[in-house]
Length: 157
Image (tube, rainbow, N blue to C red; front, side, top):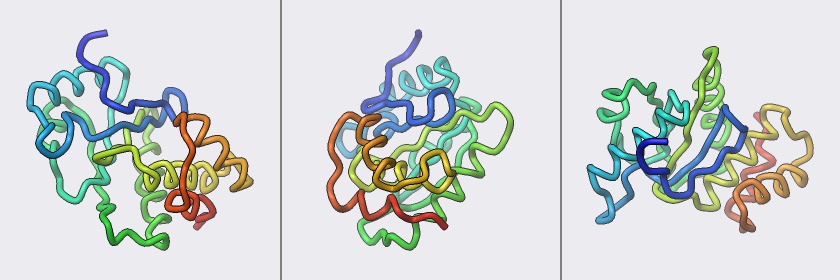
């Protein structure tokens, strides 16, 4: 496959929903060439939509130029658990069109992102029990999750 696989790329729902770190890197690590290579890889992998949880709309123009649909919801340091259902709605809307394949990203795949993904599994009914959802998302991501992420998994709304 052409391009460069984004850091932290993982399929959460195989062929439908993936997660990664910010495309092109974040902070002083961000590079335009890396962003272009990663976008090329995403397109080759079948991704056709990006949901960004960044504070700003970084990379939006690059995504649109590559033909990727784009949605944005800010998840910053003041993020509150009661906002989780709004993110679940954004993800559901992004996945609604036939053939939609979505990448969710933030600067890092941290406990908040992992918890939101676990919560989304419960929200959609793919996993009914929050305890099972916690174990499932930790297995998918390949690491344990702390209390910041766990608090997001029981959010069903």
